[in-house]
Length: 543
Image 1 (cartoon, rainbow, N blue to C red):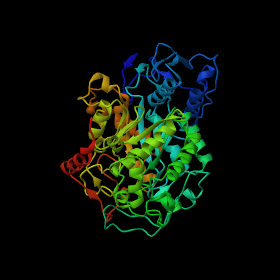
Image 2 (image 1 turned 90 degrees about the horizontal axis):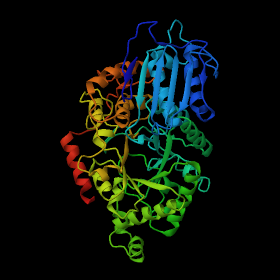
Image 3 (image 1 turned 60 degrees about the vertical axis):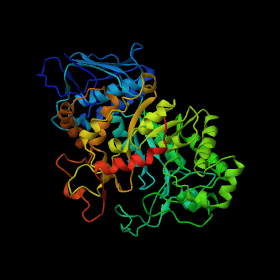
Image 4 (image 1 turned 30 degrees about the vertical axis):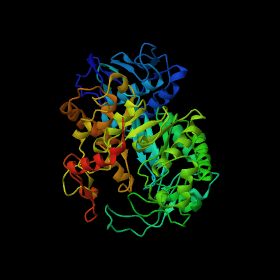
């Protein structure tokens, strides 16, 4: 029997038939106590389609799969023992058992992931002991459904892919200038008007053309309850984000009185930073407090995203009423209105026991200690936030933005920013070396971000996310001192699982012909150019 240490993708093993391997048969059953029924039902559903076996819940048969809890194991940790006598899987909690179930499936032939009976397969797993636990409690992916809407069925599929990689947090970016994707019963025009746009920009850059085709969609509150429940069954927390006080033109199109100018606007049809922001009237604060009340009713997450990124201040500076509000509130500079707005939302959500999550621009103003910072402009925000006593989610763009191009090849579709490879992501360390041990404890984990300006279909999402998300998942699960060569060997086996699931990942040699977008303009940058741009943006962040 072989022992395997912590890693996301099990090492490939070869065991001679009949020498202690576990063989899944029509007689194999699952035993689980009531508190592990959710994991047991998931495992049964994972094993049945390809094998055609009933995989019944039965404690009486030998050679079965036994699930249990072990108080000696940490939360999310598990111990998986596979032998010819059966499978014993213990977890520190139900989540740990669920992750052990994922590993058990990965030890079986990759055909186990197919959704119809596979003839002639030998459903064997090698004799092995796996003892595993995650490094970070926040192992996430951010999915932008505002720029391009992703139908509910595709969100559920993405949750399954996250679960396969033991990711436990879906940060769902629900609103932006280009669309409002969440039904708010009190304000129906947010989706009636803000849920669709007249056309979309195709490609990057100011001169990029538009497609002339309407685009839209939104999730009903029943859809959201289903998504949240589906995620919960896979031990994934859905963290919603409603962007404020910038990136709000879809809301302004629906309710012009929320804006500084009050002008009638359409939902934004271009990419990039938009000058239109919320006004600082108390009625606008009340509007968004009402919005967030419905958000908190739908999402049980302890964390609620409030955006706070890329908020221009020119409208506030040039507007007489905004300048009056500065005086009334005892504030000095227009930039302070952003911090004031975020503070008001923070206090409202804290009263309901929630913590706000904001992009690292929120460090430019006052923050409560409970505010959580998503560091995207490099790691400067992570260092500053941790030194100021704030918890941090690390997602620096140069290591975690999966909408960025994947190589220097001219065939990369809509090449945006720097080339970000699987190897680059695998080298990511979410914990800055410059922090003290106490400060490092504020790093909750990290996430990969999938902005969808140029991800306009589920097939494109597959291409941009995989296999880079596999590398990020192991970074967030595993220990420091990882070996990319070892990971690459295991990834080759894992790609067979992705193929069985139906993931259209990017091949290592480059995009396939139908994955390319010839003639659509991109916006490539060198690493030096990107680093200089980010350095200029973070000068206002202090530790």
